[in-house]
Image (cartoon, rainbow, N blue to C red; front, side):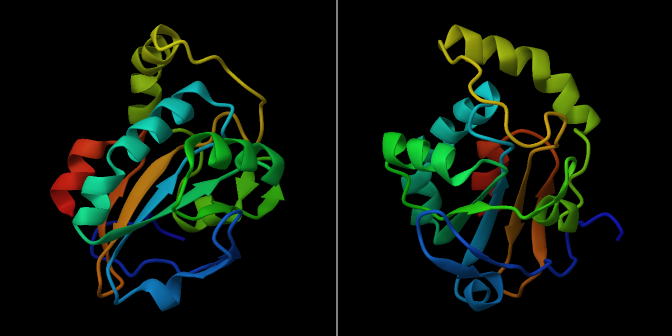
Length: 175
C-alpha cells in the first residue's frame, strides 16, 4: 500500500468502539468531516497530553461540524479508565493487532514506525508532559508506533494527513 495522502480516498473500516457501539466509517462519510486521531496508547505521557488538548478543543472541533474518531492500541480496561476520567464522548476505537508491531488500522493509514517529525518533537513533548506532572503509565501496543491525524472530507477523500503528534492548530484550520 502506498502512502495515504491528501486527495486520496480514505481507507474504510468497521469496528466496535469501547464507548459508542459499532462504528462503520462508510456510514459516517458524507454527513460531516471525520477527524481520525491515531494515538498510541493511554499510558503514553505525550498521548495523555494530546488527549487533554483534544478534549479542551472539542467544542470548537464539533462546532465546525466535525466528528472525532479516536484510534488506540490500548486494552478495554485501560481505555475505560481514561474514558471515565475525562468523560470522553467521542468514539474510542481499538485497532485490531496483527502482530507485536502491526496494528491493522494504523497500517491501513500508513502509520508504521514513528516518523522523523514525531521523533524530532519527542524531547520537547516529553519535557512538556513531565512539566505537567504526567507520568508514563502501562506500556501497551508498540512503543515506536507513529501517531497521526487524518481528516476525511464529506466526499470520502483525505483532506489532511499528518504523521506526527496532535496538531490542533492545523486541524482547526482544515476544518
